[in-house]
Each structure stands twice: as C-alpha cells, then as structure tokens.
Amino acid sequence: MFRAILDGPQTRFPELADSFLKRGNQHAALHCYDHYFEHLPPLLGDDIEKITFYLRQFSDYVHMLRDFIFLDEPARNPRTCKLFGIRDGEEKGMIVLSKPNILYLTSFPPEKNLDSKGNFVVSQEHFLTALQHCLKTRLLDRVTRENDTCHQALHKPLCVHHVIFKNCNSSPCDFSHISLDSVWFQHWVQAHLLQIDIYNNILGIQYPREFRAQQRFV
Image (cartoon, rainbow, N blue to C red):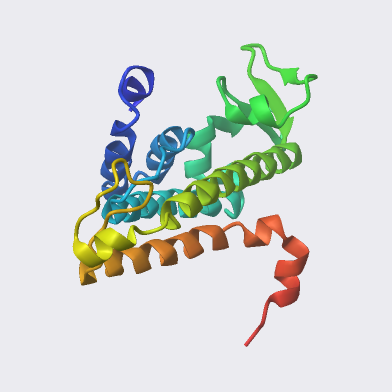
C-alpha cells in the first residue's frame, strides 16, 4: 500500500482497497480510498456502467468515513488507533499522536504540546473534537465535490438523432451517443440511487438542525 502511495498510479488504490476489505482490514481500505478520491476523476462520458462502478466505490468510501465519525470511544478503538497512529499518553486522559498525522495538520492550533520524541500530546476531549472536525470536513468536501461532478455526468443531453437512427451526422457531437436498452436503463437507475445514498450521508452533518427536526420515531 505504501509503495503504491509513493510510486504507483492512482488507479491502483481501488484494487488495493477491495483487497483489504476482503481481508477485513477496513482502516487500510479507507486509507487507500482516501488517497484515490483526493482528486476526483472526471465522470463526463457515455459509459454509464463505468460511472455506476465508480459510484459503488465512492459509496463504500463514504460509508466507511461516516462510520469512523460516529465510532463509540474512538480513542480506544483499534481501527482509529491504526488509521491515525494514536496511543495512550503517559498521563491519564492524554493521547499521543505520532507523526505524520492529518489530525494535527488540519485540526490543531500552532501551539501544541510535544513529548520527548516530538509527537503531539493532547487531551482525549481535544482529540475527539479534532477527530470530529477533521472527518466531517473531509466527508463534506468529498461528497459535495463528487456530487457536482456526478451531476454533470448524469445530466448530459442525449443525441436524439443517434437514439432514433443509431447514427449521427455531427462531428464532433456535443451530446451523448448511447443505446437505450434495458442494461443501460438498469445502470442509469442504479447510478441515481447510489448518488442519493451518497448524498444522504452528509445531510445530518450539513444541516443538523433541519435533519433532527425531520426525524420521525416509530
């Protein structure tokens, strides 16, 4: 995994993530997906099957990221400890963050307490606040950017001439050339349902008051 991060092409990360998931190594899979989706690939194109496959991968990533946000006692969870390189400090109630770590790069003020090895030492309360802020910000950023990209891909107008006559006289043509068969329609429906599921993961974070007000309890 680390060799792929340093030297390998970005396209290898989904394959590595899938391999880790099959072995139950969720924190490593999330690490791979996080690097892969740091720069969202363009989805503009006519291949709805590839778009649907991409959305499944992104949906897996979003669900894993959201799970980490709402973990019970994340400071004591093995997955959090491995993903962020944290451990208990020498003093009770303190957390040590090993370098490098995205939490202290994004969530902590310049004045930080350091141990003898140069690692950051913070209270559990400060760590939980930083973790929530870091992951929620990351989730909102990735999903909103992906939603804009996906909106462009799924709403590209069809070439009516190609739909009716199976050919097009325009070169180049600014519209989509696709075959409206049952396979295309199935992938088209799946893509929209996946996008709804993906965006639903940030509603409670993006609009917390409105989300709580609309909750219904049986």
